[in-house]
Image (cartoon, rainbow, N blue to C red; front, side, top):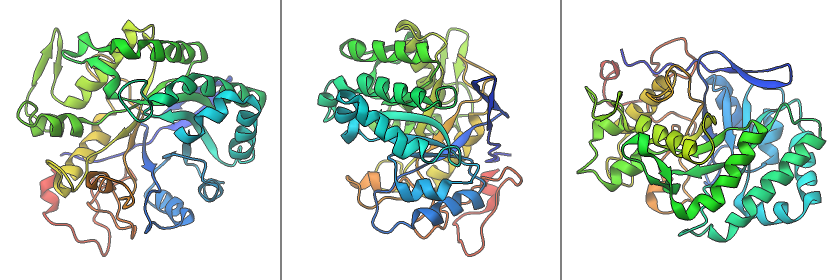
Length: 362
């Protein structure tokens, strides 16, 4: 039975170290780029009612932080790209940012990571001019967190995308592009030195949509009936594993052997592009949340902390594809039946009509 069961790990702070208790750690990203979204207080209530234990928030929205107080929801809080320059060049600004957005809410809000910048690339993107500020901003935020007495509770990192990988096939040959190494290597050294994971946004959808003749839909959707790619002793039955293992290999070649990776975004859109259907999104998300319990061929047996993108459709995004990644509609009704409470395999919520039958999920 292809059950979409999320048993969400709990964060323990023991002996000053951050550890995971429990087998799985799955959260959902909360983006706000829509003009029809419910207020943060209702969104946090939605997380709670579906037993979603982890959230990624892209900027320190004060209403959301207030709503999170007193909940058990663990938080990745983002420093938006627009704030990188100021925080990199002004340590006092970093201390103020931490005071206003972290210390003022701690311990009522359970901060897990601060991610400084999202998908910044030093080459070929609109963020290239910001790359020089990422590591200095990470350093200043890290120092401010330490000064606030929270260095053992909250780790500082950044989120990358897979365009920084130059070679990913086979996964054991994974390596970063040569023209990003001078940017990434010092960041990796910072993470290793401070015991923080790298955050990575991993989307098999984009690989599939870019090469649908070469990458099969079942391989992208976790539904391939047998191994598709052999890499030495490792067999790959899903593209997600191949992408993540190529990142692990790239990290090994850049001084980050053993560095933890948090999959800070992964999902499948329901409209706007190649292979975008509600059924494909349901299949991907349910299979993903089940699959990450067991690790990858390269690192088996260890659950992969993963955040589904995203909680809602966001109608202010462009292009059209970017509007349709939500697990929930803006009216708070799920697009497809998925169970976040870990007690039942599937549940169809009252008042929500879904095409197809429950049997199709088994």
